[in-house]
Structures are given as C-alpha cells and as structure tokens.
Image (cartoon, rainbow, N blue to C red; front, side, top):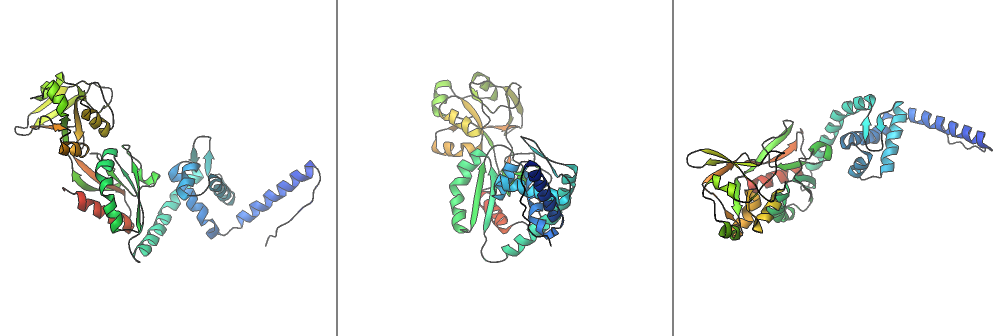
Length: 335
C-alpha cells in the first residue's frame, strides 16, 4: 500500500523533481483505484456528455464547475487516455470518450430505473417533475390550475420551463414537455392532451372603427397581426366549414411576432385582426375583450390542431411523472 510521503528540497531543480514524483505517485494511485471508486466519475462523464458543457453539467449535478472538472481529470488519469476535448466555449468527447459514454448509457439507465422502481413502491408519490410548456398555454391554462395538483400531491415538486422553443428533453433534463406541434419526435412517447383550434379575433373597438370582414378576401384590406414564418409574404388559408372550400389570402399588417400572447395583446389594444390558437384567446373571448371574426371559416395550416404530452422513452417511468401525466390528461383531454 502506498503511504503519504514528504520531502524537503531546496532550489528550483529539486522543487521540479518533487512535483514530478508527486505526479507519478498520483498516477500510480489512480491506476490502482478499484472500479467501484470510479462509479461517480463515470456518472458525471455521462451528465457532461448530455449537457455539452462543464457549467451546465455542474448545475445539473448541483456541484461546482471546479469539482466537475477535477472528477473528469481523475477519470482520464485512471483511464490513461483523454476522454474530453476542452475549448473556451464548448466540450467535445474524444473517440475514446464517445466509446465509453456509449457503453455506459444502457447500464446506468437500468440502474436508475431500478432505483426509481424500488423507491416509488414505498409510501406516497414524491419526487421532482421537470416540464417544458409553451408560453401562452403555461401562463393561461396550466399555471392557474397547477395549485390543485400540488395540494393533491404535496410531496411532488414541479419545475416548469416556459418557452416556445422546442427543447431537447433528454439533453436538457426534462421529464416531459407539452408540445403544440404536428411534428413529434419518433424516439419519444407522445400522448394527446387536447384538441385545439385556430381562431381569427379582433377587439370590439377595431371592428367598430374598421368594420368586420365578411369573407376571407376582405382581410386584404385590414391590418392583420400575424405570426411570421420565414421570409415569404404572409398568407392565411381558410376552409369553409360548410362546403369545404379553401381560400388563401395574402395579408399585411403593422405588427408580427413569434409569440401568440404578444399577438393577442396587440389585438386587445385594437391594432388589428389576429390569428391565435384558442388557448391563447379563450380568456379574452370569454370576457368580451376580443370577438371572433369570420366564424364560418376555419383557419388551416397555421397552428397545430392538438396539444401533446411528450416524454423520452423509458422502460421505467418515475411514479411522479406518470401521476402528473394522468392528472393533466384528466383535466384537459377534450375538456
């Protein structure tokens, strides 16, 4: 067994020699480390590979960036090969690092699933559920009722990320996402949450001043508030609810934004006619602050027609995640 040593050197050359000896002993000690002493190091490497940076990995593990870096250096010394390529802006795995991470993913996933399955069988449902949801849906539909869930399940904690960006669930650490999209990842589980409609709305003040359009073609003469999609001239497409006829209209307007709540707020100010998903417009329609325009015509090819609950595939899902999923669907499915 190697014992701690101390040296008393004088002069620059001897100090350099002492440093070399210390480094050599550290290398010997790392090589003699048992595999089970490296399990934490291996787990941290997996998290680093998922997060793509030391900063994000440290935040996910709730440790310091320095501790994260030290663990990876120790693992590299024990492996005898570089596992990570470090730059000032990013982290990339070497070929050896990629091979090791690929070998580790499945067994570590099984260990995690086994632990959660045992833990979840005991006592009340508990744990942290990380969720991503669109801004308008989260603010107007989810947050107002989430207190009911937390009171029913006091040992479950919810962490909600409100964004219209399509986050990467696995790499960013989310348990599930609510998606308003027709394009869903094939590698994930997708459960329908509820149907949605796209509505054309305007304030009573705007309609009183400018008149209400009677046909989709009339929209060309109105100020339309729209969601920009690329650099092409904006067009809205409608289907006649009774006859199925389709009409496409080129529109123009003084305000465009990629957030439906901002479009709604502009419509509430009387700036023009807005196209919105129903969950963003429902409260204002209920209060009379907005009115539906062209109710006979159904807007198509604008927003998705369903909201989905999406989660990464896993053989064993934490009970807190399934509990929240079931509760959401009970509250929203075609409700």
